[in-house]
Length: 344
Image 1: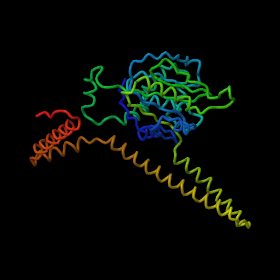
Image 2: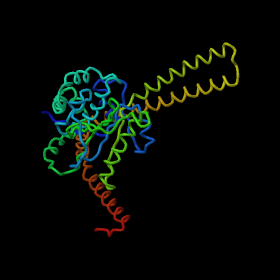
Image 3: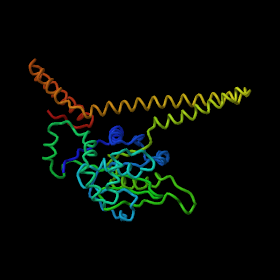
Image 4: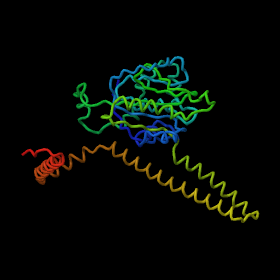
């Protein structure tokens, strides 16, 4: 079985993964706050993806029997480093009715629909198309494989992705390292006969996991899988343009009141606001593309060529000495700011 690379927890990376798998009209947003207000704005999100440091945990929460939830797509992780893509697929494949999955994922879901969770995970791991998309973000470091092979157990920290999704009035935590999905609660509250924002059901589970690590650990990341913002804004602009035409018709019929003028001005202001937001989104999307191209680019040939030129011109030794001086200077500044004695 071929290996899978580690994936950076970045909205631009995950958005490109989604597009490369053929899914239309979806992007990933990063959350910078765990406040309730931030979660409430995500009611229409397809799902959440949470990254945390993996440790052997004593999780006593009961898992559901996946065979009793045939419509919930739950794959177990059977290969190292696949958790990023599996968490993403757990969101996408459980949102088929809300978005356009594309041929690759539709075929995968149909083929594995009746499989057990471990067989679903094994099929994903052996999917050449999915693996190629995932590994398109593999490191270009020529020593990467050698370092991974030599890396001993316990060296460095391992991180893990899990997903949270709303499904048939229930919110589930989908962790590929567990036997089955975890039921976090019902969306419809029978006591008050009212549906809750599903993300408010997820929030306590995330906060509890963070609390379990203690104050020393702060390396967490939360992302939401949402509709493409440019498409949402364009739909809003189209609606506002229709309203603009309607207001013009009212004026043509003789309504020249101050109230009508105010409505037209407010509508025009909203259209301009949406257009500015769309420009900002397009600029951010372009930045994501540029950053991803840099992530994938192999800089080794350029670096080697530069070193050869510097060696030929006899400049390497001088640059090394300058680098050593900068390092020593930085150490002295650090020691001074910390009130430690300087080491000669």
